[in-house]
Amino acid sequence: MLSRPTTEQILLDCCRELMEGVLPALSDETAQVRVIMLDAVLKNTAVRAAHEIAWMLDETAAIDDYVHAVRAAVPGDEAVRSAAEALAAAPRHDLHLDAVVEAYCVAGKAFSAALEAAVTGRLPDLVARGEQLLEQRRDREIEVMAGWSSTGR
Image (cartoon, rainbow, N blue to C red; front, side, top):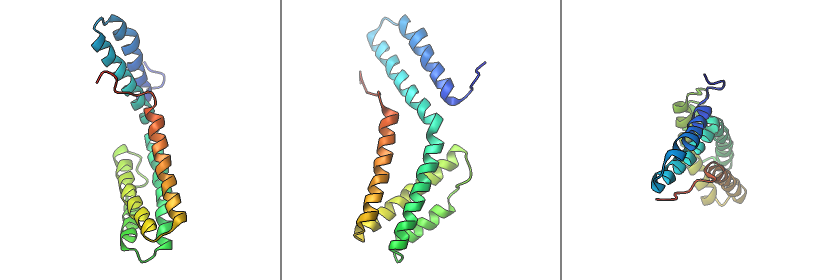
């Protein structure tokens, strides 16, 4: 019985079994590389499983703030108004993964509309703020994918 039956722990236990129980029994080098690749994918998935809802909620909240700031700066922009309304209507208090992903996707569309309005409106502070949000997303992806490579493919 697992003492911490989280998805993260289950995936990490699978990694341990692959590396300690399966890999040493393999003599085929291609199969060994495949097991090592699976280990890396499972470890990255474990990190995501442990944090992705919190990450998406945090990013959605940051995007919501950004969209409101752009809307205040460009009040007549119909795309930003519509996107802000869609984001306000998105499921924001349901912690089931599907609902969080849905709100995150709506936030992504709202972010695109807001960043486009900031660029078009020549609002350098809001463009810089939008770029910072993009950098934070990229940095998180790099962190999650650290160590992953497509070796053998």
